[in-house]
Image (cartoon, rainbow, N blue to C red; front, side, top):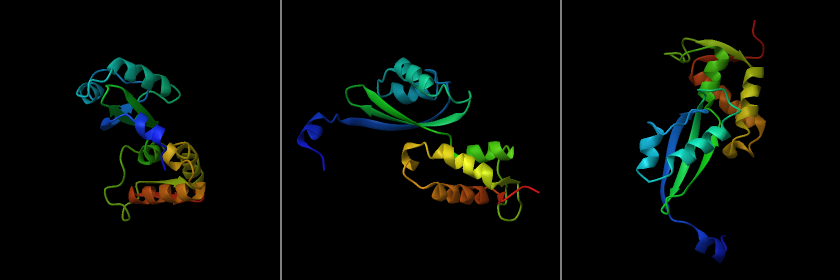
Length: 155
């Protein structure tokens, strides 16, 4: 339960904006500019902060970012790691998944690949307290729905 001080110091939220921006590539051009501009947020401050936070990733890695815009024209944002599907496609060397998952296998991966992806995803705030086994099971399910077969070892 919140204390009285926390309730009184809360700032009213104007909007929650979800964007996918390439790592280190935030510029005040579309899609970032129009999304933040309509709430009168400081575009350059966001771009600089985002690019600094995503320096450790390779350029053009799609990063999910959630921006909370407040009524006093300030903002906060959280950066998530790339999606599981992006990691699976990179690991399998695919452009896109199978057109008929379950019938036609697009590629195959080992459990080691799945484990490495799970370790990266465990760093995300929303997966922080999930066991690694649960994250691996979720990744295997995603891989199956993309037509990627997960094996113990590649033949």
